Length: 374
Image (cartoon, rainbow, N blue to C red):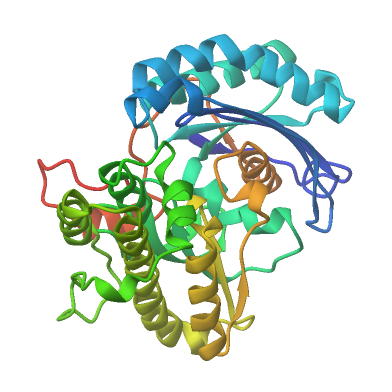
């Protein structure tokens, strides 16, 4: 549960620089970071440590939740210690601790959140439970000052949605995936092509030598005029084509076709959102965040779409596109500045929409079905 705290007095957290320890354990990275938010809103990353579990999961072709959770338990103490050492701080130099509380693999989320609670209790610090997706939403602010509001395409491993972002805790969903996310399509098609894990970067590398024009992949939701996404049909069609690929060149051509098709759908829906929001966004800024934003073809296609609509394009630095704790620390600092802190009994959440009003009143999936993570 979240509550408001009064930081309005002179010299309080409302105006002073804030130094926050951030913890991220929602999937297969154990991460800790210390970020300082200045009084004028500029973020400085004092440390950012990420322990990847890629080698632990490679043999399975994807993340195994039980293995991920155990690794978080084993690694988090050392990762946090290193982050504090690199920042040159002790716990008495912190103003609060922020931890991912969802959405994600709930066993892993519980590890980071429990560690954050322990630090908060032991040191008498405010606890800020952060939505992992909100961390991605603010991640562009780690590279340079960025003013609210802006239009956001959040495109990560398990999430794909367009949002109007007015600040932490103040976002409106414009569109979301009705089935698979773009990152899932990348990974699952890469697996069908026999590529290693993680699949997205491997597919991008294979596509460099390909000519996707030889494959005609399906285009989803052509009759709809909203901003929702669908990648399940593309995923299924490409997986079937992968079984018929007999040469390395055919595989490279299919990889290029898949990458182009995903970038095209992201650009089509983003184009609609940009046109719809053009009059209401004084900064005319289009931010793309999440792991898929690291794909060069996707990034170039979306940048061209933004510029065509008269919007500036911004993506986080590559180090902050994929899961990291610096974005969690920054989101926590911005929440703390607004006086938004969490109770110590805050629970881990496997699902947690950024726009809870839309999720309740305009759900993308009927009750009783699993649906998308967001």
